[in-house]
Length: 606
Image (cartoon, rainbow, N blue to C red; front, side):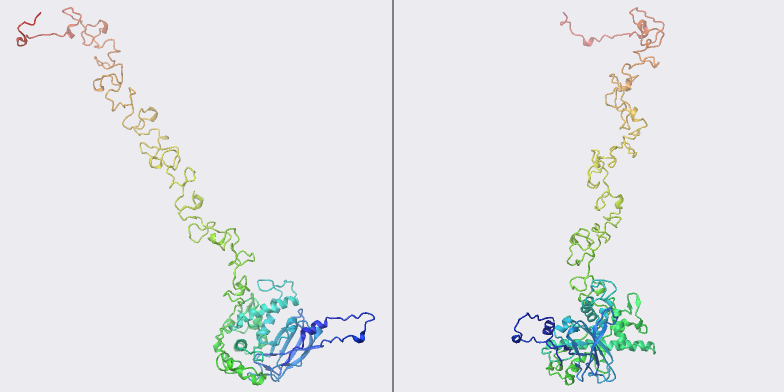
């Protein structure tokens, strides 16, 4: 295998200029070693290892759609699939696009047939040169390079371009590892994160001295053969639907890269259909095929049996590594189905939906403040901490008083008490809706709702501060009711406005006339009083409606009382036989009967 020749020293030395002072002893100066003028590049092109292919090295030109700048050298792959005869000038150690192209003499070592994938490419960066890295071009690197070209100028959660419509070398070099991760995530059939598709060997070399290293080789090669089989299936699908289809494997790889550029393989780039897939039916199903059903192209060998293939091909590649772990079943790679969405951080959220696609601990940034929701204490940036926020992802809501799933701002009835908030004095308290006296205490808890000083339990109008009583229970409060006791006598004229059984109190003794036995308090009971309401009168002897006290002729006999010998007995003739001043009509005639039984013996007489 060919190695880079002391690249780091060459780069350093090529930048050193020796300045010699006048009069120096040049004969005693030690000659400075000159760096080599070229650097040999080693590696392979692998679908299966490709022997007898052309290898072209171009200075990378990012203004060219395919990155091809000046062709700086042309080499080949030998019969063991190793890159030979490729020497790059040291003064040209910038990024290089490397293409491996099959021709009629090219063989896939795995099958002994012409390769089913005829073009592979990769990018060799200055850091790869400096590290003396062995270079491998595979279907994965080919798709990753095309994906990086498509996305390098983007500026989003994955890519850091400046969106100026021009790809710079810095943008492309920054995009390559991201593109590689996306391709590996979606199409890697379970490739582990520690496998670098640009540097991990997909065939056994003398560098693989551990079981872990051989496992990586097997995993990468399994994915390569599975992806190659899928690419062939895409071609076959197109041909089955259009027998004039000319879709090549290279076209299919480029189309896959374009399709994945929006983060999802679905036959479209954004909202534009992928032209190369126009004849392909259900690209998603083709991509997500069960890998256990896939065969290594041009063979009947399942891609899951790659371990034996790797072990057997070392006789051709010339490797002397110990491959017993591949042969005895110690290493057994089980691929998983490819996915149509890339998820480079493996957090289960597709990159296109992941605010932090490179961070497995974050996938959302609700408030777009650059801090993921898991770390952000206020996800929606509404000023309320998530632990106190009923809607931590909604900047318009923080509370849900009735826990009905509708935030208070949107909920017309926050406390779910069936009273709309606009009409509810306590919109956040399901036990209160009114505060009649506006004292901050809801009516249900307030013992005096109208704050009129009368407890609700004793108040006929607990919600009306102007009313407390309704004596006649006619629903009109006494203050407004002109007849509180509904006895037909207006309160203003009623001595007992609250007593329907009383209206008068003639003698103003506090006892209504109906209950008072002496209404005029003249000492004569009403039943015996000709004028029960007149304290100045009690009798009306002549029943002329004028009380005796006021009547000048009580007996109405035509004789004025002062001269009437019988003022209370009518005797117009004023006859008085005994001339005692009392008229005969009113004279009391006394007759006696002697009762000798009561007499004594006279001894007591003095």
